[in-house]
Amino acid sequence: MIATVTAKIKIKPTDSQMEALHQTMIAYRRGCNLVSDCVFDSSELKQPALHRMTYQFLRGTIGLRSQMAQSVMKTVIARYKTIRSSGHDWTRVQFKKPEYDLVWNRDYSLNAQLFSVNTLQGRIKVPFESKGMEAYFDGTWTFGTAKLIWKKSKWFLHIPVSKEIAAPGLQDIEQVAGIDLGINFIATAYGTDGKTVFYRGRALKRKRANYKRLRSELQRKQTSSSRRRLKQIGERENRWMTDVNHQVSKALVTRYGAKTLFVLEDLTGVRRATEKTKLKDRYVTVSWAFHQLRNMLEYKAQLAGSITIAVDPRHTSQACPVCGHIAKENRDKGKHRFHCRDCGYASNDDRIGAMNLCLKGKQYLLQGAGVA
View 1 (spheres, helix red, strand yellow):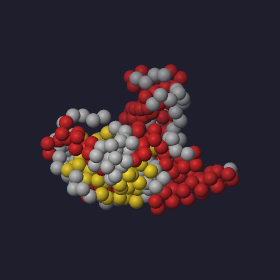
View 2 (cartoon, rainbow, N blue to C red; view 1 turned 60 degrees about the horizontal axis):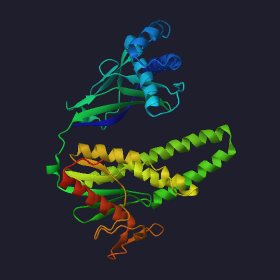
View 3 (cartoon, one colour; view 1 turned 135 degrees about the vertical axis):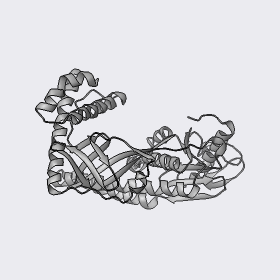
View 4 (cartoon, rainbow, N blue to C red; view 1 turned 90 degrees about the horizontal axis):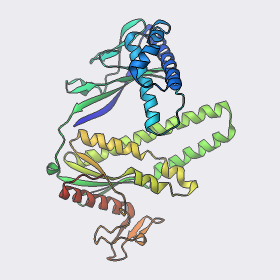
């Protein structure tokens, strides 16, 4: 199987190199908006046709190099295809952020010392912070189409790197871990060793409530400075949430290691459940980045030689993992307690969810069949 992660590095251009990169990114953005206008008006999403319609203008008037012009078309086509596939209305895409999509070995190349990139003035070679990148130069990783980003007067390069990894077969799995995602506990894990691990979320919940309060205060002011501050707070909260998800997913994979079957609830079930919450609680309940956490767990487990599956979430918090009795009355959501009305087994409701996911993982192994 192919494992793909995004490497993020900070590059350090000189003043003259920064000027060349700025000019190139401005021209690239202008080219994207030109092609976007053409796509919006014509609904044409085939690159050969767009090439005939826009290539000469991109090259002659805007001054893009040949490969840049091709990359512009691919960038715009991908954005409009996303609109269609997600079922949104056909709207004009505008490119506002200073970004530049780079094709490996055409627009850019990279070694352990320098980042080489194509600009309007030709190739430039830029040093970068190599910390954390050393592992990707061992010859086993391949580099994909990267994105050059300028943000807050700093330059970053986001590169998808892929590696062929031998996927373990079901017969190689040595343990199962059920992972229940939630609010009071970001993740609750129960393994075949019979041990439960809680990753607490109450402090995170309080911090998010504070972010919500600050956001509400700024929204009421409706000034340019408050809108600027609102954007900063949103970016800070997203960075914090991403960091928490990285820590939790890393801790889970480190604890269970290779040859583990990680079992999670299908996210669509989680979303449907959270949408039924009270309006005043919906921000805290719905908006945590569970999808991001699941994706992080999946790729980190993949790199560690493990497997991740998502199963039907029905009854994971209502079924007794000891006797199998299913009833809504088994669970007290307010107190976060589970008490089986049949056999009397009692525990934390998040732990019950993780135990039932672990049981579903064991059944999956026994059946040797795919689980949606």
